[in-house]
Image (cartoon, rainbow, N blue to C red; front, top):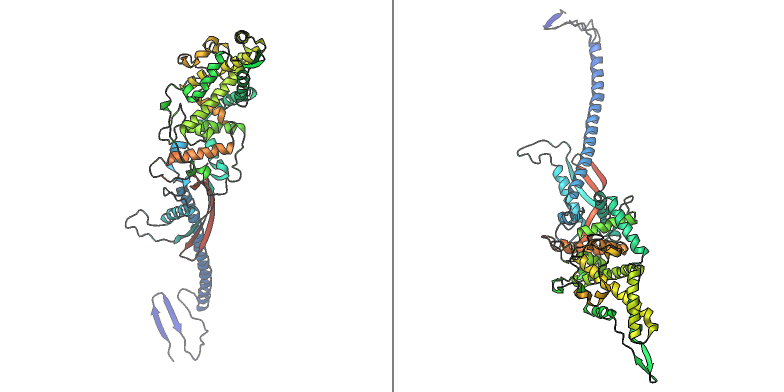
Amino acid sequence: MQSQSINNDMEHKIVFPASRYSADDLVIRADGDTAESRAVISIYLALVLTVMLSLVLTLIQGARVSAIRMEMECVTDMGMNSAFAEFHRELLNQYDVFFIDTSYGTGSPDLLNTALHMKDYMSYNYQVNKGFVGNKAKDWLGIEVSNVDVQEVSFATDMQGAVLKKQAIQYMEDKTGLDQVDKILSHFNIMRDNQLDTRDITSENNDVEHKLQNLEREEDGKKKKIHIDSPANGVNDSKSIGILGLLLKDTGSVSTQAVQLEEYVQRRELQEGVGIPPGKELKENSIEEILFGKYLAEKCGSYTQKKEGSLLQYEIEYLLTGKNCDRDNLSSVTNKLVLIRQVANSIHLWSDAGKVGEADAAAMAIASAVLMPEIQPIVKLSLMLAWAYAESIGDVRILLDGGKIPLMKTHSDWRLQFDQIADFRDKDYGEEDSGKGLSYTEYLELLLLPMDRDLKVNRLMDVIEMDIRMTDGNKAFRMDGCIDYMVAEVLCKSKFGYEYSIRRPYYYE
């Protein structure tokens, strides 16, 4: 047989007769390689490519999983931030607190509403082509939100309103200096040390007057009732007019606004959450109570500091007394102020030898006129109490006119002379404000400080509901539908077969 030669560009192959050479014989190439070495390289490359391809695919898959997890983390945070950005604007404008109204203006609070809002925000952020017209970018992750479950929340009304109170105190801590706190605390200690708010001076006065009104003397074997002609009589008789009639020239200007308290927080069944998150609890000390009192004085209206757009005109007075009518609240608070001033003024009177001497001489003259010198001490006490009360009426008139009165007076602070007691109602105190002491609002702060803490916050929440319901779109607003803390669990799925859940706590701080 003859051999054949085939020329194929770079490769020259010589084929030997089959009878003389087997298939395993060498094939000579122009490049010097052999068939055996070429086969080994091909198998090795196939094995290497298999391993490398597996590695590359694993890396790609790992990158996809990591990207899915990272995007879920980011979008969940964005969703939570977006949900918390929907804080109630009127609550912020009027009371400087941050809460999400879970009714979103519908009057029907439901945590599902917040969950759906958060789900909508997250779904939007998972859209690859959002905001770009005609963009056909491929979604390499394919994530969608399956479910958002709000598991824990803190309602504003939780723990008797402690959740709301915590935000209010945080606001005042950032705003109020310690000197203001020290000032209120100092005055409160003076009030407590002198029992200005606890001494029952009304009972003392009633006991004295009862004795004087029932004086009897035996004449001709019969007991005869004795009438005492004293300046104190006119003071005591004037109390029948009513406290507002004594304090105000025009009682017709007093607000008569009334509310149905059954519609508000204190008397309504409330939703309950988990309260203040662990580690964020209130300290419950006197400093925080003072700060909260200053918050109330700043955010709520009163007789001298009316708040625009409020339902009740005298809101701080409502906090103190809890009556459903402005007039009744003002009457109760001003009566309390008069009694506090009466105790303080009585302390001053008994410490002033000159004034004690005047009352002593007058009492002796009155007792002598009825031929009963033994009643001089009790007549003197009656005169001192009446004098202190008449001075107190003038004090509170000045406070209601926007003036100031010292908590404890000195000789130079005293206004009403002894010979003016009978005509105290006609005295004009308008030009006698020295500008020293405490204002009406500051006196109210002192009265708020020892008040029951839970009652104080619950009445504040009543006031907040009253005011917010006066604004557009908030007719059915409820404080027990407002949250400032929540824990949400988000379940997301990818079209590539992955499913993940994330649990996130969020709160305002």
